[in-house]
Image 1 (tube, rainbow, N blue to C red):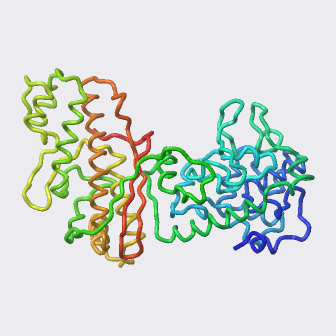
Image 2: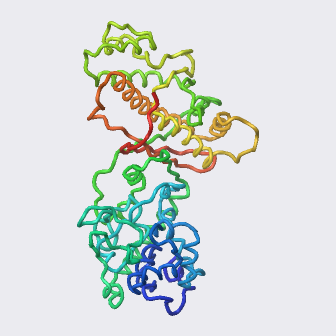
Image 3: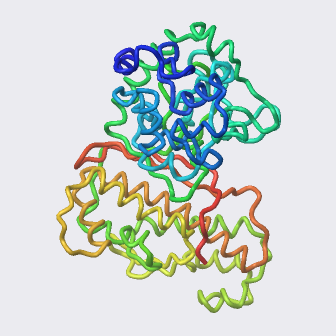
Length: 457
């Protein structure tokens, strides 16, 4: 849909100076409020006329992204309630993947183009980490003040204005934003955006992303998964993070093979669970990698020797060389599944396994039957009915191997009094599911920097 159709029901004469929409295609709610407050020079006490009563604490960017009382009031005051303008204020509409609540987990700074900011223009497209440059000016988007380096806040300042940093930096040009507003490259912007939206909306129908709860460092991984095609990239975004892709032909796991995976992620995740026997060699290799990164002459602590039946007089490296599975205590190996002790798995990533299963079942699984079953049974049964679930199994194995490696490393270094490894940064994943109801075509995994996931010991 073109911009002219989106704003068709607007007032013939803008309700306020700064509310001119024609020159500024797909103007965000934040940009609209910024233009009105700056060009009309509203006093702080008058900001409430736009619907923002508590101007000192309200995050205008977030308040306009979702339906809320302030947003409804703003649309009504400006006579835009019968238009489709607000549809394009949500970051989810611009994403080439379905994101659930990812953009609303915590306040996010504004991302702006320095040239667009002179007009008071902001587009919600700029909030996507996958968009690195302004598509029509070619300028790198910024989220830090170029003068003081602070994040660009999205609240009113003491004078009731938006877009001005506390240090005094202010790119807004009142003359350019009003008298010379038609110098904005509207035609080029509208053409690029319509091409982008056509690509993003079509792609979004069969893609979902999932990131660990309370993990704020997902931007870089998300950007790698949601990068636009080459024709829509103004500048080379630089080297992106690598992506693991699980897809292709193969045989799906037999029914109930996801029972062990389904035990993760609840309020009381099990530490001993039946997992595919293919996890055993991966975890043994991870154990050796963790121990080999420690000083080679470290003695085995008495408590570790007792807990895992190790030789107390031997070094930790010697014990692991003889028994690389000492920390996972395998039981019942030889079949398709092996019971493993995973008490050292990083807690945040363990919970994420359950979250991924829930998201897969919700987006691709059958309609819930309402049967009175345990969470574990519900998860396992739903995933069993999805074709291509082998991709999910392989992705979970990769995920758990990293979770175990990071959890074991933290546990051993704590018990041995060793500082954290400077070369092995903690990582956290963003996962993309590709498919449609009843069929999973691929799972894409990208690892970003971990910031605040908990560790279980």
